[in-house]
Image 1 (cartoon, rainbow, N blue to C red):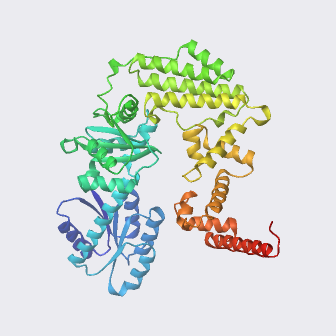
Image 2: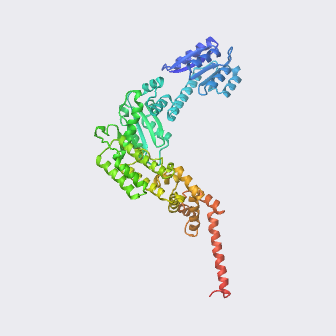
Image 3: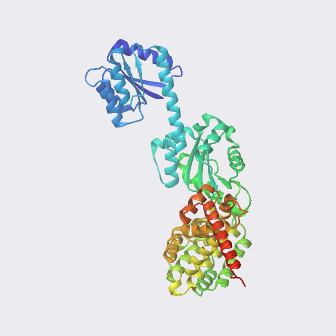
Length: 523
């Protein structure tokens, strides 16, 4: 029900307006409250929080303008419509400056009232849709709180959830690549597929940077919902996986359903499926596997001795055992990953190396494409640790910084960032690498990369067959105008002027050489 408060001190005018509102409200979706003065109206406003207030201006005690100001101090979103006679028009204009949504001139005509209520309802639909898309509505907040806390409870929000979601599924969408769609555009595409009414049985949350969470009311029309979402995202070129929970009917099981969906999505490491349903991973067919104490001690010893090959062999043997064991439970797989990362951190700490340097990015099975991907990741970190521990005391981080410098020298014509180095090359913390590079080189990594690009650009400009756009592209700039700006900042002139100056220098040198030969200066 939509609550409307009508404030009018003249009984005839009040009864007439109430009658017109009833005639408009054929669906009986309005609950109409009435008051004969501003003070009474304000008390009703505080008690019932109406979404629309229609108030006369001239009233004894608290007038319409004072009521409007009082409402605005409490809430900026409540729509307030001013009712005024021609003689009160200046008051009505003043009311608009205080945030009145609209005004109606007395005597109020049915078509004018209808137009006013149409605008109110249209704005209400827009605001509700915006709240749903941004996660600000009560039900979405309830879902978010339940996901964060298993013991969360709120009676009012729980009742609202039950009204919408009788039989529901929760799905987790994981974006494996760097790109993810614009949230607003994605939700608009869903609305196109199912219509505006779909918002009544659907909620969206952005739970983490790489994770989106959807809650959908399960009915016949929505039975292929997740397959359609997967196809929609894949057609846009996104590297995506979707894990779907089992069917749930209890509002108190939101946290459980989310955990199911997240766990199900992690099973992507065992196969090539993109849509993973909760029924697919049969828990009774799962195996248990824990890192043997012997292998744990061998790994610690290999790292302590900075033995790269032995470190690799221990990890390879562990993952060979994992593969032989079969489809081990997700809890065991997460524990195995955590054990390796803890050993690595302990080793760095004992070796006097800042353990915060180790990557904080890939700490969940969800972030790996396969078991082999996880194995290779752990091997590469093991190698890096052996290198860090093996470096001389005064140059402990030299190899890491030099690796970063060499990478810039070899890939300057590509998109190179510290984030990429951290996640795909060195498997270390991005902020730590940035700080380390500045400490050892005296400049940021981006400045170092720019220097290399500019040096290369200067050499390429000597080749007059290359256009400025080609030189920009070969120097790592897809935007030629940006390349020109950076070049001018470094060289004090545009690439074209730089090339012209080289031409003048060359011609001057040739002319001087000819003069010397004519004077007998050549052998």
